[in-house]
Length: 152
Length: 152
Length: 152
Image 1 (cartoon, rainbow over the protein chains, first blue to last red):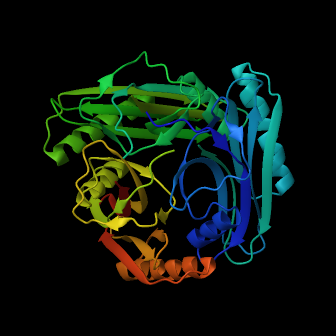
Image 2: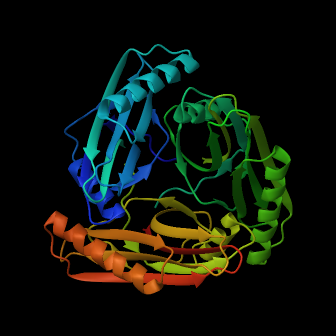
């Protein structure tokens, strides 16, 4: 089997770029995850995974990551992305992502609501939340992204 | 290299949620794959992989999965998702996913046609198909999903 | 951790199909990556990874792959996909994908510009580029895809 991740952190970034994909690439760099290979996952924090905001991941590594993002080429448009982790007392956690044409606060609030719903549905107690949200007003081509990289 | 999966099952589920992502999360829970990390793959059943409908996968595991899904926030709309595996006599299989604003039967039929085409194109004989399809009439925000998780 | 890939190649293909997903499947077959499990990654060539155009990958393998694609069911429409790798002298490389309703040349040019921007942003010197681009005029349902599979 593929090894289950043991560590995680939470990050977010926004950027302009000359194209949609380079705006995305630049937002990844702002979030300090631009030089690794994100492999997108849906969205469980493994039991016992440890929060490590100082993680250094080697270039080109395959990194399972839950993330949300939005790109826009409408100058003046406000865009936002957020990600959150709902933590249980002694089991797994749940990760939720959100992105939209809205403010940081709305993105943050959406994540809160989604985490509450996710724990309610599972009949689990939500003991803590870590949320990160960013917003950006598009100049030419912009991207906001928020991510929870999982690592070892 | 990453280890090639050796087992698989097939599942599907539909659900409502308060948001698009929680409807998706709830559909995953209905399909009994809500507490693992799906890593989306395109779409080959490895040679010799064994069907195991009783697979228990630990929380937070990284699970290569072929899946299709659809979300809708149009009350009254019928949505459907299907997934199918085409099996050969002694080689790999092919997995096809489908989702749309249609009935379960149409989704099922689409999968059949796609599997036939996939085997025809490869010049392989299609000896059996396993297909699972679900449909849902949206109340507020709904999601249908069908998946083939691959495991070890 | 997941093992970091050590080899790569670059490929592209276009095809018709009876449906969108089988057009995609057929394009993968044309690109000689139709019988493996692509796991999409964003988009770094690991340091020291070796170019190996003769790579044979076993059926059903999990293959981290950066790719771009486009499907269209508008008969007569020209579609294109391209992928490129920007190489540094002694560190990692950057992979960019592009797809659109345009010609091969435009797709190629977009990749060039994105790679230049990616290296500029990182303050790295771009010493070489490998780019592959394809185009297709849709008959019924068409797909163009370009990919950089990473392997071991």
